[in-house]
Length: 383
Image (cartoon, rainbow, N blue to C red):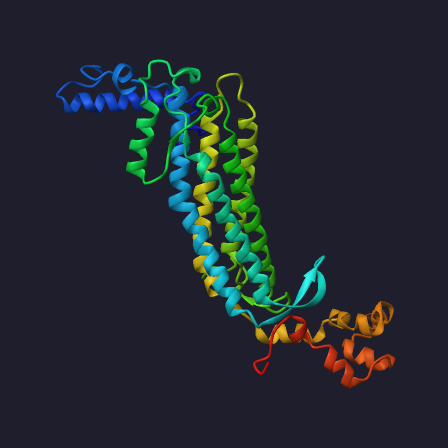
């Protein structure tokens, strides 16, 4: 199914050729096992027997849903759960590590590296929940609707028995679609799945970019995170270490975002009783699931799990940060604090030195109020 649409083989919109090919292969294999030759269509006929009670109209979208459900539950969901665990573990490890937050790419107030990673972990928790939310609709199968959702040539209760057998063999709660025509004429659920994958990709790009930017340097960048060495280096600059695994994840996410545009347009092309863009929909959805699963697993194991902080660089950044004096707003007022930051920036001195030079606060009061550790919400071991 993952190869139903490619530059080498363009399947028709309903997937009829793919379905017919499968029927012929199954029939030929059965006949060979029964002692007959290839292509005899006897005693097992590809249409009369293998395709009995079925149509490409319902079989192809059924396989679309089955393959998507299997890949989501066995590949992507576990990969996201693992990445969530890695991010949550780093959030706990960095819980008391004070850093300077950045908004608009500019220095802001003190926070902690743990808080930053807790936000990443929450994004992955939400990603898993989004998959769980869409799975019940993926479990609804069009099988039994046959031609145009009429159920023509399918015996009574065929759809229910099919789903019951499938649920037993896969361990997944597949059910017959309450409106099988919807499962053939529209593929809104597949578009929804692709939208979930697009949202997950968006989250991952944010996380990967943050990590590689926080690790930029090592001497002339932010350098607050130490990214594990992946063994790769520059072809011309000896010893240069690049965040290549994060870059791979980002590129994979870009592909998923592009795939979603294709799935969206394809989902919108359903006309009357049949959507004829089924192969390209499932091709892109399965590709998105596969590359997200693979890259998330690698990113979790080879990047996130080994992340460390540069404590010395972080301490220097916290000490030099201008906006820690924001905590003085209730005491001195916004305008007076703005004068402190302006002087510190102009004369390249610490905000503490600027505050004392302006004479608007004494050293003891400044040190008591401007405490980046407390501002970041870190409790001392004696508290």
